[in-house]
Each structure stands twice: as C-alpha cells, then as structure tokens.
Amino acid sequence: MSQETIFTKIINREIPADIVYEDEKALAFKDINPQAPFHVLVIPKQPIATINDVNEENAHLVGHLHLVAARLAEEHGFAENGYRVVMNCNNDGGQTVYHIHLHVLAGLEMGWPPYQSRKKVVS
Image (cartoon, rainbow, N blue to C red):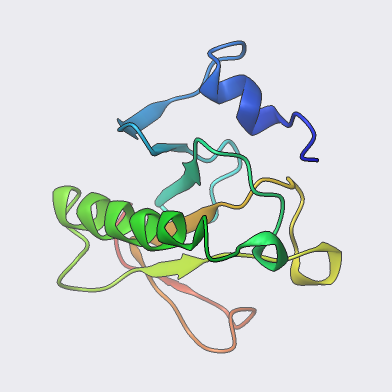
C-alpha cells in the first residue's frame, strides 16, 4: 500500500543523493536542507510510510536505523559530545516524506524544546 517517494527513487538510484552509508537494510545520505553542520537521513530500504505503520514484522528495521545512526555519529566524531536523532510522524509531527526516516543532527549544542535558539559549536 505504500506509494513511491523521493526516497524510493534514491534507493533505486533514479535520482542522486550524497550517500554516506549503505547496507542490505538501510541507506543514509546528507539532507539537502541541513539543519545542523552534520545532518543525514537514515532510511530503511523497505518502505514504511509512518511510525504508525511499524508492526511486529518490520519493527527490527527501526532498531537497525538507530544502530546506523550511532555508527555514523561515531565515525564522524559526534558520539562523545552528543547528537540528536529525530523521527517525525504525519503532518503535525513535521513529516514531509511518507517513508520513515531518522534525522541525525550533530555539530550544534541543541536545546530543549527543539525550537529554542541553538549555539553553533562546530562548522
């Protein structure tokens, strides 16, 4: 029931992306509109529209996306100082592409709530 999205086209190499990681289950690439000095999206290759569509059969993919996020943070030197991982759900949650994905953001000291001003710590 899932529709093809821009992420499906990236997975299928129909449109380009700056890919930073790939394995048999996931793909990670730089966000085209970065909100931090380091901002990548980690997506499952299996399309799942929203968090509401995660079920017993595909729940392992969400855990795998988090493992990839942690690996990327470590490889890029952000693991120790910290980073933020966000997954939006539906319109009010800020989801714009209906294929679940993690935003991995780093290189900023981030406040809470997220809309507070941020202090740049690396560029």
